[in-house]
Length: 103
Image (cartoon, rainbow, N blue to C red; front, side, top):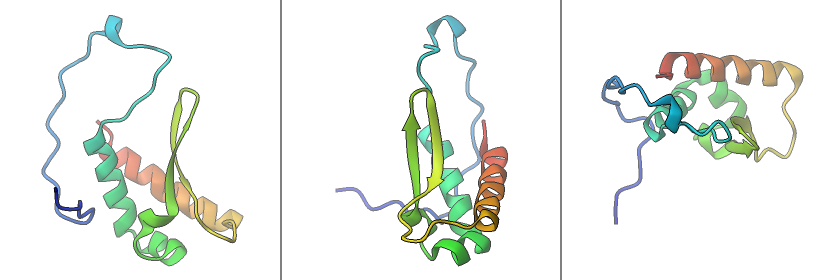
């Protein structure tokens, strides 16, 4: 049995991916590389603003949602929904994580 992933462990630099054959890409599907997702989650886990909102680990209160051709990370698992300001902070940190870890 493998060891659980430590989302705060240092990650190796990303390797450049080879270009994909556009003819092989299905426009009705969406995906994200697992290593990129791990980096985004690690970014969210380490952010003190999200730790204050969600507690530690942050990932216990964030869900990956598939909606038709869309994958999203959303807040989830809270009894009390986020306020507008809390939602703004969450989206700001999520955008930072995606921009810094996108391939």
